[in-house]
Structure formats: structure tokens, C-alpha cells
Length: 257
Image 1 (spheres, rainbow, N blue to C red):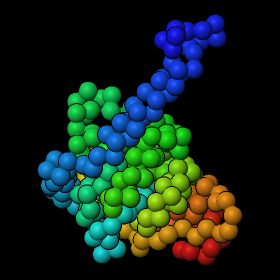
Image 2 (cartoon, rainbow, N blue to C red):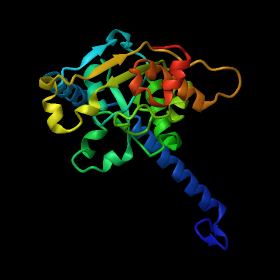
Image 3 (cartoon, one colour):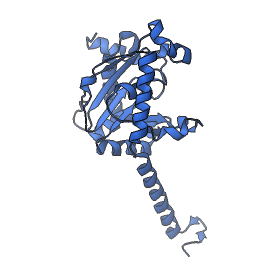
Image 4 (cartoon, rainbow, N blue to C red):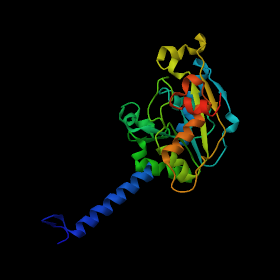
């Protein structure tokens, strides 16, 4: 009788089996998502990224000494263009898993490389993508590094947008130190021509890596948006005033140049 639908839908036994099946599928998906980047492919990608950026752009990097050599790490940065992930792959001395919009995985030539190179698919409005967040937490719990751009989309040089609260959930649930990273100048070289000639034209890109920190949280239930703003504020402090956008007033009120 458990296999026969009743007047109101599947009978209890069938519903239980369906629920178990959904739970198992979700667990299997999270397990797949939580796989670290393929070390050989990631090393190759890093080498190619270093060569390209060194030859064409010559990025100026400050603060590499702040990157912990091992242990869980939540890397948080501003997102000007599509160049930030390969740029950070080149300059941050850790193998990282990047949270990337799921739409990128539908691009034909790119799709086969996204997961092996350390990309974790996230639905639009990543704070609601529980599978992706749980997979990221699992990576952090194993001592890996996860990179997230809390704005959720590219700002194209228009200034920081307000952070999505998902970054706070990752920071608080994992307890991992947060590494703020600021990027300046990629919006001027996003197209192929400007990128290839950036060094010749003097259009340098600057990356500033801040000190790791853990967000301060008061007693009671944490306000995830407030924590996300605190985290993004640390990124804003590393940026020139013209790039601070939604966080410009906060930094000005704190008296931080």
C-alpha cells in the first residue's frame, strides 16, 4: 500500500521514502561541492595567471606576509570585474575555493574547468543558497581557504556595494579568520586590448592584503547584516576613498583615511 497514492497524495511510507531520497541527494551534492580544487590544475592555473599578470599588468601587491600559511581562512574582497578571481589566484599564496555565480558554470568553454580550478557554484543572492554555504563551511572546517566577494556582483568601479549577509554566516559559523583584500584598477583593463597593453600604458593594478581578523560580535543573536558590514568595512579601509562606495561615510565617521 505504501507505493499507492492516497486521495491527498502519496501515503506516509512513500512520503518518507521521497524525503529520505531528497536528503540523500542533497547530502551527495554538498559532498561534491565541498571537494577542494584539483591541486595539479590549480597549480597550472596559478602559474598561467602569474605569467599573464606579470607580463601584461605587473600588479603591485602589498601585504602578502599577512596570509596564513595553513588553517581555515575566509578571503573577502571587492569585486570590480571578472579579473579578480584569476588575479587573486596569482597573488595570494594559498589554494582557494572561490564562490562563483552558478550562471558562470553554464558557459560552454568555461564549465569543465570551473570546479577543478576551485569554483563553488552559488545561486544569485548567495545568502539563501544553503547547499553552497554548507559546502563552503565544510571546506573551512577541513582547514581550507574560501574566497567570497560579498557584493554578489561586479561593481565596475562604481564603488563598493553593500555586502550580502552570507559572508557573516560563513565567518561566524566557521570561526575562521577573515582576510580582507582590496583590488584597485582592474576596471580599467577588463577588455582584452587594455589588459594586454596595461603595463606598457602604465595602467597598474594594485592589490592590498590586510591583516586577518575575526569580526566582533556582542551578546545575543548576531545581526548578520551588521557583521557583513563590519567585514566589508575592513575591505573598504584598504581602498582609496573613491572606491569605498556604500562604506565611504562609515570610514569617514571612524576618522580612517
